Amino acid sequence: MAAISYRRVMLKLGGEALAGPEGFGIEPEMATQVASKIQKIKEMDVEVAVVLGAGNIWRGQTGMKHGMDRATADHMGMLGTVINALALADALERMGLTARVQTAIEMRAVAEPYIRLRAISHLEKGRVVLLGAGTGNPYFTTDTAAALRAMEIDADLLIKATKVDAVYAEDPLINPQARRFEHLTYIEALNMGIKVLDSTAISLCMDNHLPIVVLDLWQPESLQKAILGEPVGTIICH
Image (cartoon, rainbow, N blue to C red; front, side, top):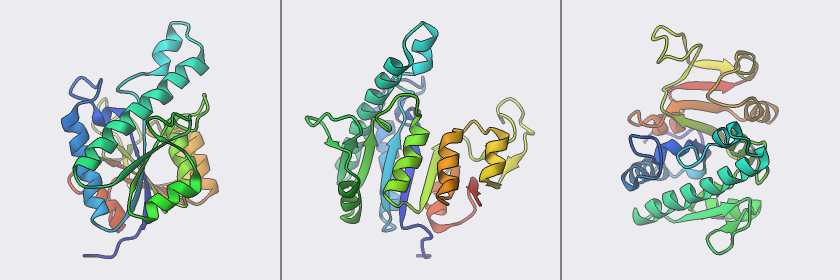
């Protein structure tokens, strides 16, 4: 097997990765498919941490449009990420992997509280660590939570796995001729205002020299290629 380029990675997934065709709820078969992709990179002797969104359960913007307080809407989203983390952890355990869910908001009956050194210890012991409840604070996205946790656990790479195979200058679904980028600097990504990752997350990665790869989760072997440092999706770095 070719040498891997990244030993410890942070995988950021949207909640929709666990949803069925409608994009809502949790479809057990989809959770199994995602777990199988994580299993394949675990077999490469890579340490994996995961941050999930909650768009399949709750979107704070929907509540805010109806007058809901932003902090309340965000806290509801954080709880949704924990539900997703528990579902994915269960799928991983059924495949024979060991998983631990840690949360930024304490709920000891269902998950460990997030403790940086404990998370690192789990990773070193070969466990998949799923980090729920975002940063524990409203007004921060799960993208930012993934970037922050990646710094804290000393990850070598942040992988943003989506339904799109790269960063484009425009929405490729609207403009099939949109320019596709294989490489962007952090500054270029910030100036473009790319939609696939928020500016706070990009800035955090830029300040701490953490490379980002944006790729299609469902493209065959896309995660393995990223781990090996092979061209896949868009890489954002200095």
